[in-house]
Structures are given as C-alpha cells and as structure tokens.
Image 1: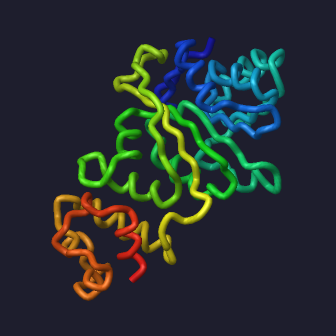
Image 2: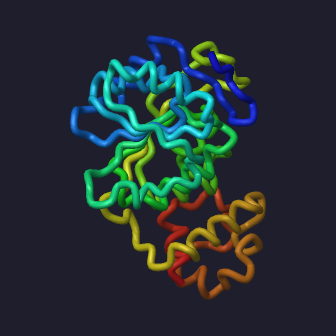
Length: 255
C-alpha cells in the first residue's frame, strides 16, 4: 500500500461515517459527469462509482494509480487522468457535454489556487464539493465585518454561492492533519450577482484592499480609486476593507 506523501499534501480519508455523509451531500446520479480531484486510495471514489457508474479522477501521484484502478475495476468505469489539477483544463474537458460535478479531498497546500483555477472554468461546472481546512471554509463563507472575511470571500462571492456543510475531525484522516476540516459546497451563479464590467480590475482592487486590511480604503486603494471615485460609488474612503460587501467592491471596480 502506498503511503501518504507530504510533498503532495496527502491525508487520506478513511472514516466510513464521514465518507457516507460526503456521498449523501454530493448525491451523484447515473449519467452525471463526476470528476474527483485527488482520489488517493479510492475511499471516496468507490462509493461514488457505486452510485453513478462512471467517474473521472485527477491524480498527480502516479504510484497510487494501479491500486486505484484495480480496486475500481469491479465497481464501475473509472478514468484516471495522471496530471496536476492546477494544469487540468476543465473547460476543454467538458466540451459540449453535460456540466461537470467536481469533488474531492483537496491538498491543503494548493487549495486556494486550485479554487481560483476551477472558478475560471465555472461555465463548465454545475457544482463543487470539497473537503478543506476548516479555517479556509470559514473564510469562504464569512460575512463582512469579521477577521475571517477577506479576499477569498469576496472573490468567491462574485463567482458562486458557498455553503459550509459539516465539520470533520482530524481522526477521519490517515495520517491525521494538524487542523480540523470541513466540507463545503460551491454552486456557480447562473447570472452575475452584481454588475462586474471589468473582472480583472475587480480582482486587483480586492487584492490591494486586503493586502493592507488594517488601513483605510483611502490608503490601501491609493492609485486605484480617488476621492471622486469613492464619492461616485457612495462609499466612505475611511472605511476598512472587511466592512465592504462584495457588491460594494464591484461598485468601486466599475469606476
């Protein structure tokens, strides 16, 4: 049996009760296009296959693939793509077929960049269910005003609705991680929740604001928004970034 590798951030799920709750949350149906990121030894892969009949998996650790394919052979049709998920083109993979339903127990060391990579292809994705570090999930679903609210929260809000489903303790994994985890559901918006004419400017503005979150917007957005811009958006320049709702950042970015 292949051991978990630290360089890939591997922590394999093994708790049957947790796995059953994840499968129930995803609720896969025959004919749906399920894509699992980081299947590992197949603890989640096999019950998903039992429900839907076929599944695509993205696995960077090629040493895990033979065991994974062997275990899945009697359960359903498994296709393993041996590639880094950060380099996988989800939009091209969908093609003209049905929307993708993406899931997985994500390596914590690449979770944030992988989320942004996936959301670039959100037009190809129906929903996403991920096991992540609980602190990351708390940031994803945080309301404005608290310390958890930040760049990740705002950028996700423009792209999808995030819902924290349930917490998972460290003992559900082998080896146990140093932090608790949580399952989160992401559903891309069918229509933009607020006007966003310049997505690139929105991203730059949000990043700049939260890079100096203790400063006022007047200081953190210097060179991006002037006093007239704040007045036109109806936003006080002496507010701090964590007090702005995502739609208010969008108003500033539209100037």
